[in-house]
Image (cartoon, rainbow, N blue to C red):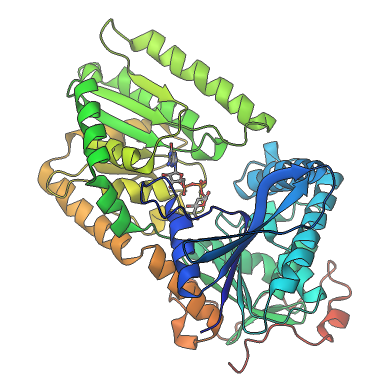
Length: 502
Ligand code: GDG
C-alpha cells in the first residue's frame, strides 16, 4: 500500500488521549495516516525572524508529523493576508471584506514555494499526496516544478464561489490554472463542483469535460464532490460519556427546564451569527407567550482575532446580544447566553444533547460539521430539531432539517417556533433520516472515497458531482479566449496529469 502524505496549513498532533479534545477531522486524518503509515506536513504555528526550512519531526500514535516555522512576514502576508483577508472572504461571498493587496499574493506564492521545497525531499516515488484547503492551492504546481510526479489530490473545505465572483480576484487565472497540476480536485458539494466547472469552461480556451475529467490548460484533472462527514461513531460515544452526561445535567439545571436553542461556531462573519441573533430577536418579539420558555445559548470561541474584520464582528455581536438581553431580560431570565470560551468536545456533546433546537445559520459554509455533531449527540427517543441554513454545504445532505434562508429573520423565527412545537413522532422521523446520513457518510467514508479516487479506481469516484459527463457542447468554451491568448502554446506541453489510462 502506498504511503499517504497529508498536507494542511496547520497540523494537529494526534493526542491519542481519548479525552475528546482533538477535533473529528484531525482524528480521522490521523487514523488515515496510521493506516497508510503516513506523514502529516504543515506549519508549526510558530514564527522565526528568518525562514530556515528546518523540519521539526515528531512521531505520535503511529503518525509522523513534520512541521516548519514561518517568518513573521509570512504570517502577515500569507496566513492573515492572502488566505484570511483575500480568499476566505471572497470564497464566502464577502467581496466587501476582500483585500486585494499585491504583497499578500506574493507572500502566498512564497510560502507555497517554501512548503514545496521543504516537503519535496520527503516524498518517495509511491507516495500519495493529499493537500488540503485554500491556503495551499498552488502547492502542487510548486511540487511539479521541483520534479515531483506522484499523484497529488486537493480538497477544498470551503465553498467554490460563483464564476462572477471568482473573476473579481486579480490573478484568478493563475490560481485556477494551478489546480490543473492536481490529479484530483475535490469539493464539498455538487454545487461547488458545478461552479468550478462553469468557471473553467467559460474562462479557459478549449476547456471541456470529457470521460477522463476536466481538460483545460493542456492538462486533465478529475473533479468530484466528496462531502466531508464527522467521526459519527466517536461523537455518539462522546455524547454518552460521563462528562457529556454531567454537562447535560448542568445545562438542564441552569436552563431551569426551559427549552434550549443552541449554536456553536468559531466566531466568524461567515457563520451568520448576527443574522441568527436577529432571527431569535424576531422570535421573541413575535411570540410573547413563548419568550420565557426559551433560552438561546451561543458558544463562539474566538478565531483569527488579529484580523480586523473578526474584531469588528466580535464588537457587533457583544453589542447585539447586550441590546437583545437589555430589551427582553427579566430579573430571573436572560434570553441569550453568549460565551466566547472554548469547550472540550465531550462537553459540547452534552450541550447539544440538552438542546431542543440546533440553530445553524451560516451565510455560506463549505459543509458545517456542527450540524452533523448536533444530530449525532441527540437522544434517539427524544431528539432535538436541526434548523439549518440553505447556504451550508450540509443542507444538500441533511434535508430533514428545517431549512431556512438566514437573511430572513422571519424565516428563522418561524422555524424556531415550528421546531419548539414539533411533536415527538415528527422529531424522531426527521432525526432518523438525518442520523442515517451522518453515520453512513461519515469521515471515514469521505477519506476512503477520496483516497480511492486518487489511487485511480474508476468506479471508486462518488456519483454526485463526478466530472464524467461525456463530451458536451458549451457556448462559452469553444469561443476563442481573450484571457488565455497563449493557452494553445501551453497545451503543447506534456500533460502532467496521469489519470488517463489508469
Ligand atoms: C471548515 C469549513 C467545513 C467549535 N467550537 C468549539 C469547537 N468547535 C468545533 C466544532 C466543529 C468545528 O469546530 C467547526 O467546524 P465547521 O465545519 O462548523 O466549521 P469551520 O471551522 O469553518 O471548518 C466548514 C470544515 O472546514 C470541514 O471541512 O465543514 O464548512 O469552513 O467540529 O465542534 N470544538 C471544541 N470546543 C469549542 O468550543 N472542542
